[in-house]
Amino acid sequence: MSNSLVVAPSLLAADFTRLAEEVEAVQKAGADWLHIDIMDGHFVPNLSFGPLVVDKFGKGPLPLDVHLMVTNPNDFLEPLQKLGAHSMIVHEEACVHLQRQLHAIRQHGMLAGVALNPSTPPEFLEYLKEDVDLVLVMTVNPGFGGQAFLSSMLPKIRRIREMVGPRPRISADGGVGADNAVELVRAGADVLVAGSSVFGKKDYAAAISALRSAG
Ligand code: DX5
Ligand code: ZN
Image (cartoon, rainbow, N blue to C red; front, top):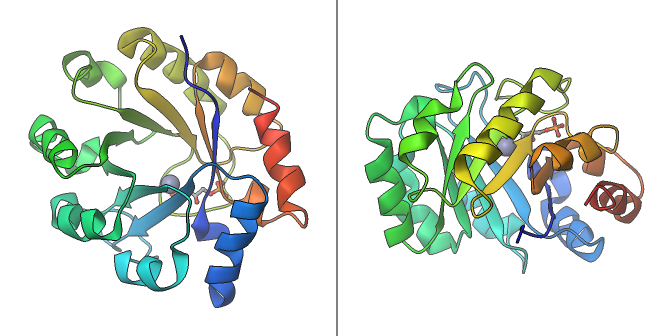
């Protein structure tokens, strides 16, 4: 049995001067999760926001899907647990002891997620199938919203789905929109992270249902 499709708008593309309203708007428009991109200016050449900002302005009833583009993701275990995050996603490229990190995330009550840059081969997942709840495939290079989708990531998603089986969720993140959602779902993705293709549109509900219809 496969997981139902999740649409997760990415807060990075929201209007930062009206974060609380934007969060409420996507929730009312039918989002399933809220994707939170935390960047430290080291792992990626950009800074975004941290748990404090999310706690003040970005917290609502939606499950928080937290994507850490940071060099030291372990520092965020407790802050994210306190925030009540649903999932904590660390980059494979940032973790020397990835299995231990994933285990610690579960022990802190969150779904254990791992993200892969476009150039990272998925073979390491062979040894972590039981440790991972979510695999996030970067379909652009991390750090910025609004970049063009890398279609070369479709066979990688297919390969990962074959490797991990039906249980772990597979997220596609970067350049995701109504134009590639069907292909992504067909390849095995069951979480569509979407920044510009939701917050960049006037009608959030129409944008979300356009993505959802891929499922
Ligand atoms: C990029 C982030 C994405 C970003 C996606 O590093 O991980 O979540 O917000 O933005 P779009 O959908 O505009 O490519
Ligand atoms: Zn992201």
